[in-house]
Image: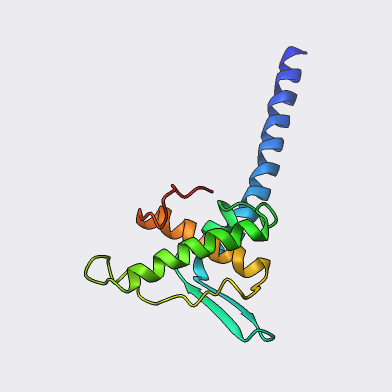
Length: 145
């Protein structure tokens, strides 16, 4: 009888392990597909702006490590983005002091324009991703997720 109970318990554990592996595999497949797509494009026809982020691994990082949309307020994101964009543009203008391969293009970000939550969210998270990936510090505080 003890043998039967032991075999039944082992069978149950094996079955329960298999079901969690399948759901984890589906989740892994979604994240793996994000690794392949390295371009994030955000556009708004009404304001005539477009942001294109071409960065290997950013989509994967955004889906797996970044705080979810709605975690930060739009005001918080706008304030941080203004600080980061200002410092980014300063570094673009000083190619002998800062790596021109990291800071290639100027970012045109105006505090008077409402870009919406999605743009501010993705731009903010790109700055966090950039700082963590390339070990840069764009402002007087350490980037956090």
